[in-house]
Amino acid sequence: MKLSHRLETLTPGGSDGWEVFYRARQMKTAGEDVIELTIGEHDIRTDPIILDAMNDAALGGHTGYAAVPGIADLRQKVADRVTKNTGVPTGPENVVITPGGQAALFATHMGILDSGDKALFIDPFYATYPGTIRGVGGIPVPVPAHAENGFQPAAADIAAQAKDAKFLLINTPNNPTGVVYTKETLQGIADVCCEHDLWLISDEVYDTQIWEGEHLSPRALPNMAERTLVVGSMSKSHAMTGSRVGWIVGPVEMIDAIINLSTHTTYGVPGYIQDAALFALNQGDALEEKVAAPFRRRLALAKDIIAQQNVVQLVPAHGAMYLMLDIRATGMSGLDFANTLLDTHKIAVMPGESFGAAAAGHIRVAMTVADEEFNKALTTLIEFA
Ligand code: PLP
Image (cartoon, rainbow, N blue to C red; front, side, top):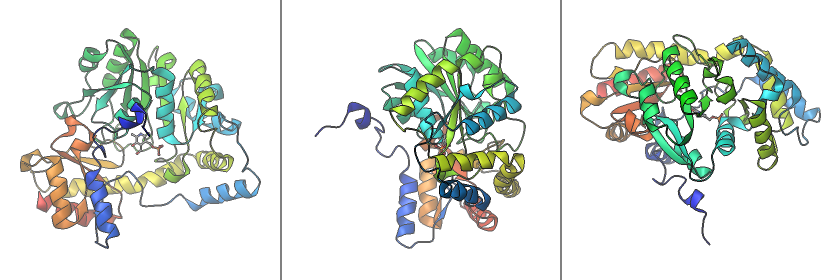
């Protein structure tokens, strides 16, 4: 039996850059003591107070089909949060609840692209981006953001690829670079989107993890609310990766169309998960800061260790749970570095090349193990370099 072209070409390179991660997992399964600094998953679990709320909701009977667009109170809460954080008046009709940010990305792509349409995304990129575009029949076109420019994308580079494209997908705070886009960068992006009539998909799943500067949502820029779809998630902000709950914020017409898509795909998100997400958001900033605190602490540790030498350079880390390290001075590629580090010291990091050509000669270090272990692993990594 034959697979569809869409699925056959979803990840044309096979594992799409996750070889080191899979190898580390195999070594671990075989009983080896590997320190994993690979995927974006907290070392803490979901806060028990959120789990209690989930349990109460489930035992209270919220286990049937939930409203497909999302329960009214959660849509309202997300809308209020967006209004408060961005100043853009946003109502529940602008919000659809999805099973996590990844499902939100897929739905936005389905909402915009027809088969064969061109879609732009910034390189370095979150690993699923090109596959998600291919998954809806689109043609992914990377636009490099250069290391020399602090990985801030340049409007001219985007404009050069914009002809016939349908959307531009950006991510700030950024995975893998830890860079937060400046107001100038975002204004440049907004100008290109308006001039070339592009939708902007703004992946803001790390919006609560800001270490320096501030997070700006491009939806708040003039004339952008009508062409921007913001992707949000409870995964990173509340350590709820396994609960699968996120959202899309955008113009009503598109949100209604995506709700119709949800009816034909996910049929919504379990009611008790949504109740737990509502409870978590109602705890306000304090809980978000508690979840972000370990990464803020480890970044400070990392800065101290890295400051003691000048072979490895830290890309200024403004947000998100990752360090992007420039290891070009070692003469190794990111892939060679990651493979050799795993073989010799049993420390797993992601090669920059896994996130696109623009991140070659870099490695991404997830700050996702306890402080002491993180300190030890990073010290060893630097000595290895
Ligand atoms: N977007 C970015 C940039 C990510 O790093 C991730 C997960 O790592 C996601 C989206 C998807 O997250 P989730 O589907 O858990 O909300």
